[in-house]
Length: 472
Ligand code: ADP
Image (cartoon, rainbow, N blue to C red; front, side, top):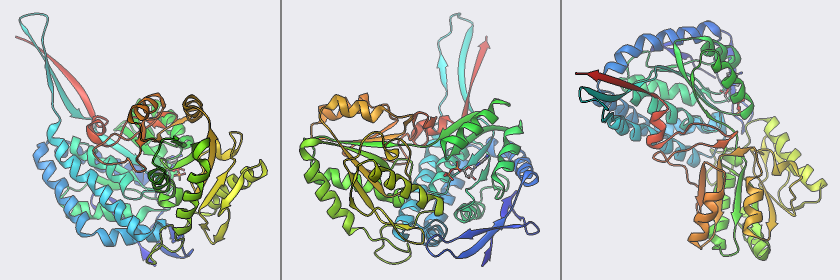
C-alpha cells in the first residue's frame, strides 16, 4: 500500500488528511491512496500557481522550452514505470499504457517547440502617425480538471500548451487515476520546472472545483469529462467570466461505404472501438454499414473480435483490460440488453466475464430507437446498422447532440471528402481509426465541447490577444 501526496508549491501536502483509496480495476485490490483534499488545499494551490506566474511568464519562451523539453526527456526515461502505474490504476493493457505515455509525451515535446512560435502581428494603421501591434500573452493561472480514461495524455495535452504559453496550472486528476498525474508532476519538478508552476490537488472534486471557479485569480478552466459535469463547470465559470475549454462526451458514428476496403474498415473500427476497452470519447459508438456489404463486414469484424484477449493488463498478450468500475459494467450491460429486447442480434460477447471484465461485443439488426444509438456506451459494444444511401448515412450520423469524432470508410476519396465535410463533427477519421495526434486539433462540435487541444490551435486556448495602438 503506497501513500501518495498532493503537490503544492513543489512540496508534498496531505500527510495529515483523510485518505482516498486507489483501486486496481483488474483485481479489485486497493494498492495506494491519496489525500482527501478540499477547499483549503485548492486555494493553497492557486496561491502557489499565482505566485509562480510572474516569474514563469517572464522567462523567455526559449528558457521555458528547455525546461519543458527536460520534462519530456524524464517522462521518456520513466515510460515503463509510468505505464505500469497507469495499468494498475486504470486497467488498460501495459502496451497500450506505454503507447499512451508516448502519445502524452508527444504533447510535451510538440509544445516545447510551439511555444517558440507564439507570433504577434502588425496591422496597417488608418493614420500615418499610428502603428498597430498585436501581442499574445499567457491567460494566467489555469485550472485543469481531467478524467480517468487517459491518466497521462489528458494532463499533458492541457499542461503542455499552458506551460509553453507561460501559464501556471492547478490540476485535479480523476479520483480513480491520480497516481500517474502525481508522478508526472514529480518528474516536472525534477526536470527543473519551478515550484508552483504545476500543482496537483486530489480529493473532493466538487469542493476543489467550486474553490477554483470562485477564485478570480484563476483565469482559465480546461476540462475533459462528462457533458453533464462540463455544463455545470461552464455555468460556474460564468460567474467570474473565465475562459473555458471543454472536451466532453462523444457518440462517434462510423460510416462504412460499399466501395470501402473491407479489411481496412474492419481494422479501423476495431482500433476506434476497442482501444481502452471502448472507454474513450472518440470510440466508435455506432456503425452504419451499406446493406450490400453488411454480411461480409460483420463476419470479418467478428473474426477479429475473437482474437481480442481480455484480461489483466499486466499479463502479456492481453489486448483489452477491465472497465473502470461497476457502473461502467452495468451501463454496457444495459445497452446490450436494451438492444436485444428491441430486436438486435447478438453476434458475439454481450456479457460480463468476471469482476469488471466485459466481453467484446458485436450487435447487428440495430435500430435508432435503441439506447446504444443515442447514449455514449463507454464500453466494448459495437452496434451495427445498415443504410441504403449516402444521404441516409449522413443524416443518421448527424442525428446526435454530440459532435466529437466520426469515421468514414471508402476508397473513393472524392466521396470521402464530400461526406467528411457534411459530418457535424470536429474530427473525421477517413479510412483512419486513430486520428488523434499531438500536432492536430482535437475537439468537438455541438455538446461535445468548446475549443481545441493539440496543434497550433491548442496553444491559442492559453493566450490572450493584446492590441497595442502606438501614436507616433
Ligand atoms: P467521468 O465520467 O470521465 O468520470 P466526470 O465528468 O464525472 O467524468 O469527471 C471528470 C473529472 O471531473 C474528474 O476529475 C472528476 O473528479 C471531476 N469532477 C466531477 N464532478 C465535478 C464537479 N462538480 N466539480 C469539479 N470537478 C468535478
